[in-house]
Length: 183
Image 1 (cartoon, helix red, strand yellow):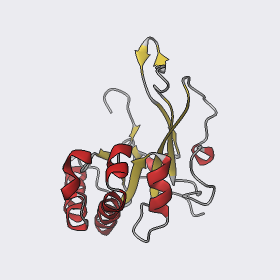
Image 2: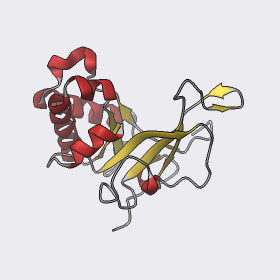
Image 3: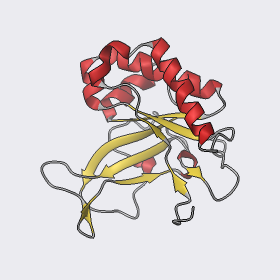
């Protein structure tokens, strides 16, 4: 807050491709509990606080079913602790995760479509997900600009990724935790 940052995404990297044998339901639960403890340690564990698991595309491609089992269990553990689980991933893992019972409440979609900022970008219009997949307010963040096709996205000469999010996907440190409005 002292630096003027009042909204951000809490992310848990979790197990990735170098630990395929640990992409299990049990490990997902354990890591979900650990993520919740870390959120609590930061003093941000108000009921409904959004927290996100990173599922890299290489991890999903190396072990599709196991990575989704892990992610689903992680989401269930986070939800059981009273927090709002989200998953950051490319479109393919999120499309498959949407078919499952154990899935996140919201998603942060990595779908790069340009190399510049767009002040009118809308996360509910993110490319790569169907309109019925996490369509409500508070269910989507979108990483829409970044480095791809050997071309960086730069702001002020610095390589960046640019995201847009529904406010309910962000932790608000300036006051009471916002809850998403009803659909």
